[in-house]
Image 1 (tube, protein in one colour):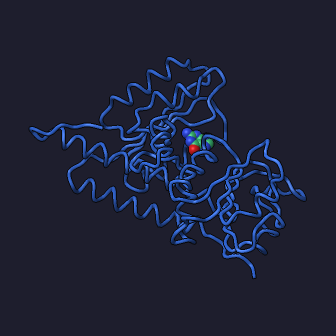
Image 2: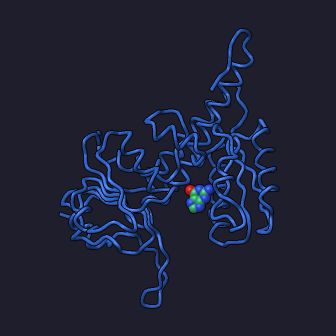
Image 3: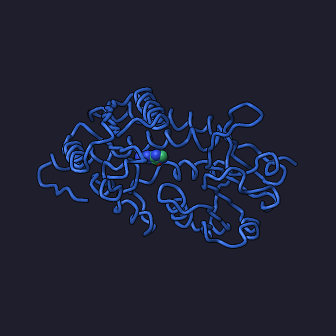
Length: 302
Ligand code: GUN
């Protein structure tokens, strides 16, 4: 029997609706409108498209947005100064610096400079550490957060399931594994040096693939009934047409899996929806802290 197709577009619309309601409730309670600041260096066309989508969707759920389009030649210290200004600006709830950054800029220094409570990408080491320690309340990277929502649309409870994450990037693979572990899955990570990928994939009840290698995972790799989440998205030319393909050979996998995300229309739409959710969550935390700080005799901490 063919797998259930997990509809990321529909779930992303639900998340956006929830965020819009959350924004309205926050503002009705007297807090300022949340605001997302997005910073982009250089003229990479794909990054410009991503940033425009982020800004448009932020405004569509009732939040403010700001966009800083900087030259690729911007120095690291100029970028760090801008981040510090945004850190101090109380009207900014969330800061996102679009990757990839030009090679003269140290990405680790940039993510560390963003204050953890405004780090809507969840890349600051403090937020990374919170998730790694199994703690709730930190900001979590958007794509893995979206993948968890997709998995939970299939499974009520994932504790005890075998999960394999293929790909060990800081943006997807590693945070994904930390989230699955926090939910008590038995988690493995496969990466570029992993041997016998096929056998390892076949042991997984939940298989998350994030490598950027088109059709790396074939139908025969998949455990019958498994939930397969395909994070990859690559533009290829096939028979004279351009098309988007994932890291999983969909036509084969759909015959074996229990549930599977399509490409496009699976993980992609969830990433920006979860960025909006993170921005709302950051704004809520900041509003709570401001309120606590304004109340006499209360000590604000965190
Ligand atoms: N470039 C590709 N994915 C991402 C992401 O999740 N966050 C940022 N900041 N840049 C990206």
